[in-house]
Image (cartoon, rainbow, N blue to C red; front, top):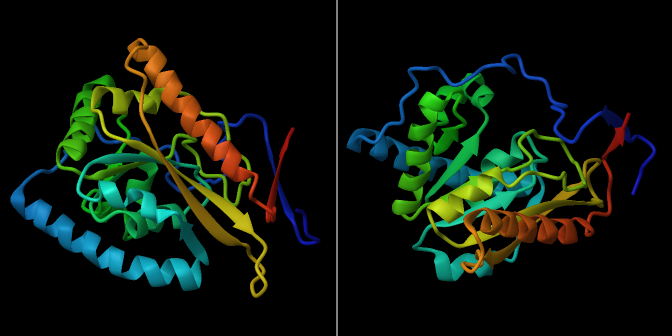
Length: 253
C-alpha cells in the first residue's frame, strides 16, 4: 500500500484532531438560530441546486471521486434517510453528499462556520452545526427532526474529526445513532476508499454506499442504538479492505 513519497501522521488516540484550522476551538454562538422562514428555504434551495450542479464535475475531474452503488437509494428518493460516512476529505466530504442526495442536511463541527467565504453560507447549504451547550441541544434535535419530517437525507460523519486519506475506519461511539431511533428512517453508510491512480500522484477516491439498516424493535432503545452503530461500523470496515493505496500513513505514538 505504501509509496516512496508517503507522508506519516502520528496520533495518540483515534479521537485526535490531526487537521488544525485557524478557528479550531470555535463554538456555536449562544445566539445561533436555525432558520425556517420561506425566504431562507428558497435561498437554501437555490444554493443547494448551484452546489449540486458544480459537485459532479468538481468531484469527478478535480477530486477524482467516483460513487458506487447509488442505485440502492433509488427506492428512497422521496423519503428521509440517514447516511453515515467515514471522514477522510476536508473538502470532498462537503461536496460528496450533493452528488448523492437531492435534498439534504449535514451535521458539521462549529469550526466550519468560520471558514472564509463558505462558512456563513453553510447553514443555508444544509449544514447543522453541533451545539455547544445543553441550552442549544433542544434546537439541534429539533433541526434533526425537522430534516427527517421534510423527507431530507441527513449526512453524519461519526468519526467527528477529519483524517485526510485515512484508510482505516476509526472506532466511533453510538451517540449519533440515537437520531434514527428517535426519528425513524432507513440508515445507510458510505465508505470512502482510496485506489492507486494511473494518472495522478494522489489516489482516486471510490465511495461505496450500503444499506438499508434498521433497528431491531425487540431490543431496548439503547440496544437498538448500539446495534445500528455496529451494523454501520462493520459494513464500513468490510468496505475499507478495498483500499489499495496509503497516500498518508497514520501511526500510533
